[in-house]
Image 1: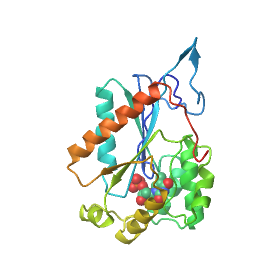
Image 2: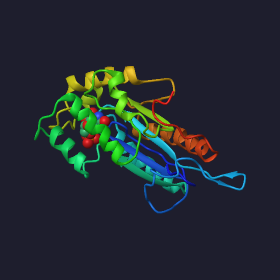
Image 3: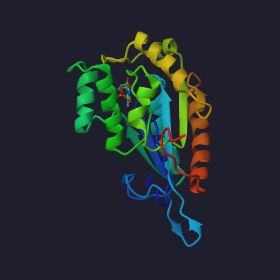
Image 4: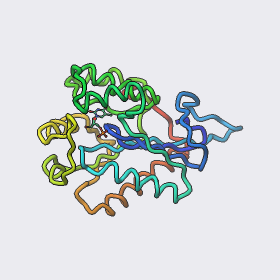
Length: 231
Ligand SMILES: Cc1cn([C@H]2C[C@H](O)[C@@H](COP(=O)(O)O)O2)c(=O)[nH]c1=O
Protein backbone atom coordinates (compact mmCIF):
# COMPACT_ATOMS: atom_id res chain seq x y z
CA UNK A 1 0.00 0.00 0.00
CA UNK A 2 1.86 2.37 0.54
CA UNK A 3 3.19 0.88 -1.58
CA UNK A 4 5.68 3.21 -2.38
CA UNK A 5 8.26 1.01 -3.88
CA UNK A 6 7.01 -2.20 -2.52
CA UNK A 7 4.41 -4.77 -3.27
CA UNK A 8 1.91 -5.64 -0.67
CA UNK A 9 0.12 -8.89 -0.16
CA UNK A 10 -2.85 -9.27 2.09
CA UNK A 11 -4.24 -12.47 3.23
CA UNK A 12 -7.36 -13.53 4.95
CA UNK A 13 -10.09 -11.11 4.60
CA UNK A 14 -12.61 -12.56 6.90
CA UNK A 15 -9.89 -13.45 9.25
CA UNK A 16 -6.43 -12.61 8.14
CA UNK A 17 -4.65 -10.34 5.80
CA UNK A 18 -1.14 -10.59 4.64
CA UNK A 19 0.92 -7.89 3.11
CA UNK A 20 3.99 -8.56 1.13
CA UNK A 21 6.44 -5.99 0.01
CA UNK A 22 8.85 -6.41 -2.82
CA UNK A 23 11.94 -5.40 -0.97
CA UNK A 24 13.10 -6.03 2.53
CA UNK A 25 12.34 -2.85 4.33
CA UNK A 26 10.99 -1.74 7.68
CA UNK A 27 7.74 -3.49 8.36
CA UNK A 28 5.68 -0.43 8.64
CA UNK A 29 2.21 0.01 7.40
CA UNK A 30 1.88 3.34 5.77
CA UNK A 31 -1.15 2.72 3.73
CA UNK A 32 -2.73 5.98 4.58
CA UNK A 33 -0.29 7.85 2.44
CA UNK A 34 1.18 7.42 -0.96
CA UNK A 35 -1.65 5.40 -2.31
CA UNK A 36 -0.58 6.18 -5.77
CA UNK A 37 2.76 5.17 -7.10
CA UNK A 38 5.20 8.00 -7.15
CA UNK A 39 7.32 8.74 -10.14
CA UNK A 40 11.00 9.25 -10.46
CA UNK A 41 11.57 10.90 -13.76
CA UNK A 42 9.46 8.88 -16.15
CA UNK A 43 9.94 5.72 -14.22
CA UNK A 44 7.07 4.43 -12.16
CA UNK A 45 7.99 3.26 -8.69
CA UNK A 46 6.97 -0.29 -8.03
CA UNK A 47 4.40 -0.88 -5.37
CA UNK A 48 3.28 -3.56 -3.03
CA UNK A 49 0.55 -6.09 -3.67
CA UNK A 50 -2.44 -6.66 -1.46
CA UNK A 51 -3.39 -10.32 -1.33
CA UNK A 52 -6.38 -11.58 0.59
CA UNK A 53 -7.00 -15.18 1.56
CA UNK A 54 -10.63 -16.07 2.02
CA UNK A 55 -12.26 -19.25 3.17
CA UNK A 56 -14.36 -20.89 5.82
CA UNK A 57 -13.09 -21.52 9.30
CA UNK A 58 -10.63 -24.44 9.16
CA UNK A 59 -10.03 -24.04 5.43
CA UNK A 60 -6.34 -23.59 6.11
CA UNK A 61 -5.92 -19.83 5.84
CA UNK A 62 -3.65 -19.47 8.86
CA UNK A 63 -1.28 -22.25 7.86
CA UNK A 64 -1.13 -21.14 4.26
CA UNK A 65 -0.53 -17.52 5.24
CA UNK A 66 2.43 -18.45 7.40
CA UNK A 67 3.88 -20.63 4.67
CA UNK A 68 3.30 -17.96 2.07
CA UNK A 69 5.09 -15.30 4.09
CA UNK A 70 8.08 -17.59 4.58
CA UNK A 71 8.14 -18.39 0.89
CA UNK A 72 7.92 -14.77 -0.21
CA UNK A 73 10.63 -13.73 2.21
CA UNK A 74 12.75 -16.54 0.81
CA UNK A 75 12.22 -14.94 -2.59
CA UNK A 76 13.67 -11.68 -1.27
CA UNK A 77 10.29 -10.06 -0.79
CA UNK A 78 9.27 -8.33 2.39
CA UNK A 79 5.96 -9.77 3.47
CA UNK A 80 3.67 -8.84 6.26
CA UNK A 81 0.68 -10.71 7.59
CA UNK A 82 -2.37 -8.92 8.86
CA UNK A 83 -5.07 -10.81 10.60
CA UNK A 84 -8.62 -9.63 10.90
CA UNK A 85 -10.19 -9.24 13.23
CA UNK A 86 -7.15 -7.59 14.78
CA UNK A 87 -8.06 -8.16 18.40
CA UNK A 88 -5.29 -5.93 19.76
CA UNK A 89 -7.05 -2.65 19.07
CA UNK A 90 -9.89 -1.15 21.13
CA UNK A 91 -12.37 -2.05 18.43
CA UNK A 92 -10.78 -5.48 18.12
CA UNK A 93 -11.29 -6.08 21.81
CA UNK A 94 -14.98 -5.31 21.43
CA UNK A 95 -15.16 -7.78 18.56
CA UNK A 96 -13.31 -10.38 20.57
CA UNK A 97 -15.67 -9.96 23.52
CA UNK A 98 -18.59 -10.51 21.18
CA UNK A 99 -17.06 -13.56 19.50
CA UNK A 100 -16.28 -15.17 22.82
CA UNK A 101 -19.82 -14.54 24.05
CA UNK A 102 -18.60 -12.14 26.70
CA UNK A 103 -20.82 -9.41 25.26
CA UNK A 104 -23.90 -9.07 23.11
CA UNK A 105 -24.25 -6.93 19.99
CA UNK A 106 -26.82 -6.80 17.24
CA UNK A 107 -25.81 -8.03 13.79
CA UNK A 108 -25.48 -4.61 12.22
CA UNK A 109 -23.30 -3.32 15.03
CA UNK A 110 -20.84 -6.21 14.87
CA UNK A 111 -20.69 -5.84 11.11
CA UNK A 112 -19.75 -2.17 11.48
CA UNK A 113 -17.14 -3.06 14.08
CA UNK A 114 -15.53 -5.58 11.72
CA UNK A 115 -15.40 -2.85 9.11
CA UNK A 116 -14.07 -0.25 11.59
CA UNK A 117 -11.36 -2.72 12.52
CA UNK A 118 -10.22 -2.70 8.88
CA UNK A 119 -10.42 1.08 8.69
CA UNK A 120 -8.16 1.22 11.71
CA UNK A 121 -5.51 -0.28 9.46
CA UNK A 122 -6.65 1.58 6.37
CA UNK A 123 -7.24 -1.68 4.65
CA UNK A 124 -9.85 -3.05 2.37
CA UNK A 125 -11.44 -6.36 2.88
CA UNK A 126 -14.68 -8.16 2.81
CA UNK A 127 -17.44 -7.87 5.22
CA UNK A 128 -18.88 -9.47 8.23
CA UNK A 129 -20.62 -12.77 8.03
CA UNK A 130 -23.43 -11.42 10.10
CA UNK A 131 -24.80 -8.87 7.72
CA UNK A 132 -27.63 -9.91 5.45
CA UNK A 133 -28.10 -7.23 2.86
CA UNK A 134 -25.18 -7.10 0.45
CA UNK A 135 -25.51 -3.42 -0.39
CA UNK A 136 -25.74 -2.55 3.26
CA UNK A 137 -22.73 -4.72 3.94
CA UNK A 138 -20.67 -3.07 1.29
CA UNK A 139 -21.35 0.49 2.36
CA UNK A 140 -18.90 0.77 5.26
CA UNK A 141 -16.19 -0.82 3.12
CA UNK A 142 -16.38 1.74 0.35
CA UNK A 143 -13.06 3.48 -0.06
CA UNK A 144 -10.92 0.82 1.55
CA UNK A 145 -8.10 -0.39 -0.61
CA UNK A 146 -9.17 -3.17 -2.92
CA UNK A 147 -7.10 -6.35 -2.84
CA UNK A 148 -4.90 -7.06 -5.83
CA UNK A 149 -5.71 -10.71 -5.38
CA UNK A 150 -8.37 -12.66 -3.56
CA UNK A 151 -7.50 -16.32 -3.12
CA UNK A 152 -10.38 -18.43 -1.88
CA UNK A 153 -9.51 -21.66 -0.10
CA UNK A 154 -12.44 -23.78 -1.13
CA UNK A 155 -13.73 -26.42 1.25
CA UNK A 156 -17.25 -27.53 2.08
CA UNK A 157 -18.53 -26.77 5.58
CA UNK A 158 -18.84 -30.50 6.31
CA UNK A 159 -15.27 -31.23 5.27
CA UNK A 160 -14.01 -28.26 7.23
CA UNK A 161 -15.86 -29.46 10.31
CA UNK A 162 -14.24 -32.89 9.94
CA UNK A 163 -10.88 -31.21 10.43
CA UNK A 164 -11.93 -30.41 13.96
CA UNK A 165 -10.52 -27.60 15.95
CA UNK A 166 -13.65 -25.54 16.18
CA UNK A 167 -13.44 -23.62 19.42
CA UNK A 168 -16.15 -22.08 21.50
CA UNK A 169 -16.55 -18.89 19.53
CA UNK A 170 -19.91 -17.87 18.15
CA UNK A 171 -19.19 -18.54 14.51
CA UNK A 172 -17.39 -21.82 14.98
CA UNK A 173 -20.44 -23.97 14.40
CA UNK A 174 -21.26 -26.12 11.39
CA UNK A 175 -24.67 -24.58 10.81
CA UNK A 176 -23.23 -21.10 10.86
CA UNK A 177 -20.37 -22.05 8.56
CA UNK A 178 -22.96 -23.38 6.08
CA UNK A 179 -24.50 -19.92 5.99
CA UNK A 180 -21.06 -18.41 5.48
CA UNK A 181 -20.47 -20.75 2.54
CA UNK A 182 -23.72 -19.58 0.95
CA UNK A 183 -22.65 -16.01 1.52
CA UNK A 184 -19.35 -16.61 -0.21
CA UNK A 185 -21.25 -17.82 -3.26
CA UNK A 186 -22.92 -14.44 -3.46
CA UNK A 187 -19.71 -12.51 -2.90
CA UNK A 188 -17.60 -14.54 -5.27
CA UNK A 189 -16.76 -12.92 -8.56
CA UNK A 190 -14.73 -14.04 -11.55
CA UNK A 191 -11.59 -12.32 -10.33
CA UNK A 192 -11.22 -14.60 -7.33
CA UNK A 193 -8.70 -17.41 -7.57
CA UNK A 194 -10.32 -20.52 -6.19
CA UNK A 195 -8.02 -23.17 -4.76
CA UNK A 196 -9.22 -26.59 -3.71
CA UNK A 197 -8.42 -26.56 0.00
CA UNK A 198 -8.91 -30.32 0.26
CA UNK A 199 -5.70 -30.99 -1.62
CA UNK A 200 -2.56 -31.88 0.32
CA UNK A 201 -1.26 -28.82 2.14
CA UNK A 202 1.87 -28.70 -0.04
CA UNK A 203 -0.22 -28.58 -3.21
CA UNK A 204 -2.32 -25.72 -1.92
CA UNK A 205 0.89 -23.99 -0.89
CA UNK A 206 2.44 -24.38 -4.34
CA UNK A 207 -0.60 -23.05 -6.14
CA UNK A 208 -0.78 -20.08 -3.82
CA UNK A 209 2.88 -19.30 -4.40
CA UNK A 210 2.37 -19.22 -8.15
CA UNK A 211 -0.64 -16.95 -8.19
CA UNK A 212 0.75 -14.62 -5.54
CA UNK A 213 4.12 -14.25 -7.26
CA UNK A 214 2.36 -13.48 -10.50
CA UNK A 215 0.24 -10.86 -8.74
CA UNK A 216 3.27 -9.28 -7.06
CA UNK A 217 5.04 -9.04 -10.40
CA UNK A 218 2.03 -7.38 -11.97
CA UNK A 219 1.90 -4.84 -9.16
CA UNK A 220 5.60 -4.16 -9.41
CA UNK A 221 5.07 -3.37 -13.05
CA UNK A 222 2.65 -0.64 -12.09
CA UNK A 223 -0.81 -2.16 -11.88
CA UNK A 224 -3.11 0.63 -10.72
CA UNK A 225 -4.41 0.71 -7.19
CA UNK A 226 -8.14 0.74 -6.74
CA UNK A 227 -10.65 1.14 -3.97
CA UNK A 228 -13.34 -1.27 -2.96
CA UNK A 229 -16.58 -1.07 -4.81
CA UNK A 230 -15.44 1.80 -6.96
CA UNK A 231 -16.98 0.34 -10.09
C1 LIG B 1 -12.65 -9.94 9.88
C2 LIG B 1 -13.98 -10.65 10.01
C3 LIG B 1 -14.08 -11.84 10.72
N1 LIG B 1 -15.27 -12.47 10.85
C4 LIG B 1 -15.34 -13.71 11.63
C5 LIG B 1 -14.61 -14.89 11.06
C6 LIG B 1 -14.36 -15.75 12.26
O1 LIG B 1 -15.43 -16.67 12.41
C7 LIG B 1 -14.36 -14.79 13.41
C8 LIG B 1 -13.05 -14.70 14.18
O2 LIG B 1 -11.98 -14.78 13.31
P1 LIG B 1 -10.60 -15.49 13.79
O3 LIG B 1 -10.97 -16.88 14.24
O4 LIG B 1 -9.73 -15.49 12.58
O5 LIG B 1 -10.04 -14.64 14.88
O6 LIG B 1 -14.73 -13.52 12.89
C9 LIG B 1 -16.41 -11.94 10.27
O7 LIG B 1 -17.48 -12.51 10.39
N2 LIG B 1 -16.33 -10.78 9.57
C10 LIG B 1 -15.15 -10.11 9.41
O8 LIG B 1 -15.12 -9.06 8.75
